[in-house]
Image (cartoon, rainbow, N blue to C red; front, side, top):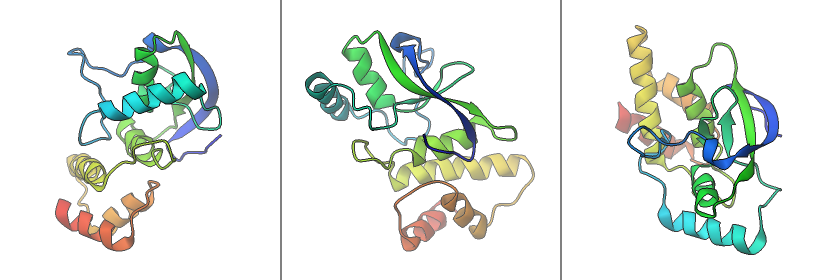
Amino acid sequence: LPEYRTVEVIGIQNRKVDSINFKNSEGQIINLARSTGTDKENVKGILESIKVQGWDVTKIPPIIEEENDTAYDGFTRHEALLEKKQEVAPYLVVRKKEGFTTDDVIDEIGLGANLHLHSKKATITDYKKRFRAFIIREEEKGNQVTINDGIKWFASIPNSFDDEKIERAIDDVF
């Protein structure tokens, strides 16, 4: 099982698929790590893969919060399971570590957990969206965020961007 900076991994547990919290009260998917919604073509592709090959147990399943079954990662896979009318599926259950917020977890897991082959990787636009939110949170605490803080923020989240792309993204956000 992976190790994370912001959460403790409880383990992989089977959960009722329809009990996972991944939509807001208006029925919109609440993947706060992404700049755009779930890719419906990717949902179809994953659904077809599950139907033909079954569940790939070599990959980390969707990640949810232990306390309230809220999804942090795996929105597309979860949506495919719902469309398949799957009743129960495995989820990686985690618990926030003391001192970390839900936003910290979304930054690390919602962005960084999407580097595996079958995922639609988080884009630089997704990272910039979350970095903007980080700056706002820090400024609300009275902290001034610097370029060096931006470099540290990017380094704290798994990504596949080169230094130049990260520097351009930080400049864009500032």
